[in-house]
View 1 (cartoon, rainbow, N blue to C red):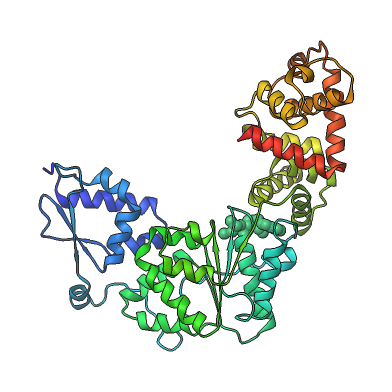
View 2 (cartoon, protein in one colour):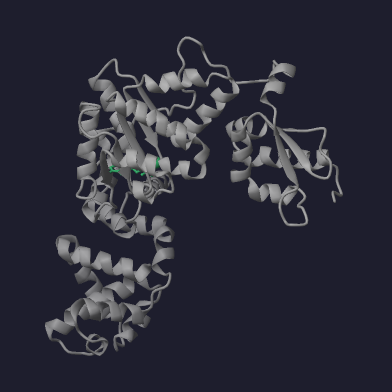
Length: 447
Ligand code: ADP
Ligand code: MG
């Protein structure tokens, strides 16, 4: 039973949503919902279409449970009524996004980032293939790989490449009709046009494009109502030989979408962006610093890149923080300044789970020696070298004093450990193979 009136409950919910959602989200998805006067023990909500209902249930379930009453079986005391036709008649002036008749375009197109150009996208083994595919598509849309499906983890440059394709295609083909849109934007577009009864216009708009760029298709997994429309659009364009580029955080086969859509996406070229290797990360940092008008010494770039290795956006964040700090304090950018400013960005993962035992076991396995041999005092190279690597990793990964770390290796002073750390640090800069082995060990130890 309700202890409060449906109106009070609904008003509270709407007020809370107004604070939580962005203005656009609120306007699109919450504002169109009205509480029916017929509401009794259950709330009866009037929605303009099924999409608004679905969006509310998919995205705000927790909030609904917080504010609305539940039934004896635990489900929400809530029902819906679709009232588009009635509302059109009774409230013709209700605010609706209007679409221009003559030139229907998407109101949710993404504004292209002007920095996201091919020349600002640093190449390395992790992304060479995908970058050249992207350049191919921008040069001759619809002719090389169609669709081009780019997938990879967060912050690895998918959106950057997508925008680069748009910039380059515009430059090369002046009259080309391009739409660059996020999957969320595409869905919002459909909803807007459904509301203003101009969905056919929108369909026409999408079907007249030469190049459609869709960012973050994984968003569709939670909005399956819209899958068919997107799939129809893709098919219409592909059948006309028009180019499609899609980005995603996982490969097509791992998306929880229909076989039909997955099949379409796998049709062309599926390309993966990997995490960049150390050298590429250093080059990215130096390039970004240059764009900001800073000169970043190689040793500092190396130091940052060595500690942040999973996500280019994080690298950029570190650089922004460092340059802001150096600017503010009027300091030269040195490794010490970087360590001081960025230390906390590095330390949490470093000090996480690993222990001296794990480090010793890991290095022992790497060099096929025993933990006792690493901890022993033999000067033979086959034991001394792994020992130095273990000392290096211990200093890098454990948040303990040098003296304490040295004691793990049976030493009473820290000089051996410090010497080993310095030696291996220098070698890592020069020896790619060693660098990779250490990186792999760090990843294992930190995960
Ligand atoms: P994603 O879409 O994969 O999450 P973004 O395209 O938004 O990643 O990239 C995050 C940031 O990292 C952007 O500022 C982008 O310019 C930068 N970035 C990623 N990879 C590279 C690269 N290879 N060269 C230069 N900048 C890069
Ligand atoms: Mg992105």
